[in-house]
Length: 113
Image (cartoon, rainbow, N blue to C red; front, side):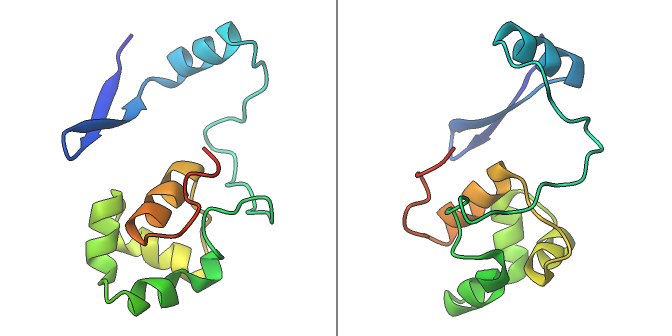
């Protein structure tokens, strides 16, 4: 397998692998259906408690005195992508939501993986 490990503060945080290998792992785990990589982001639902609301993301960040560039860099995304998330034009995936919740110290960030 061609796996890239991404670390934060010396600890492994993400594993990145080619799509075909990812699909093979899903199949081996008995998970047969997976959206294609170009499928639009899923809509956040009320069962997604990781952030109080993405519409509150900007005020949460600003309330903590964190610059958009600093939060984006820490989370591993571009400031322009974070601005799109804050404006509601893009919905982040679960990993980005968890990272945002962690960096903004949102209570209950571990509730869902």
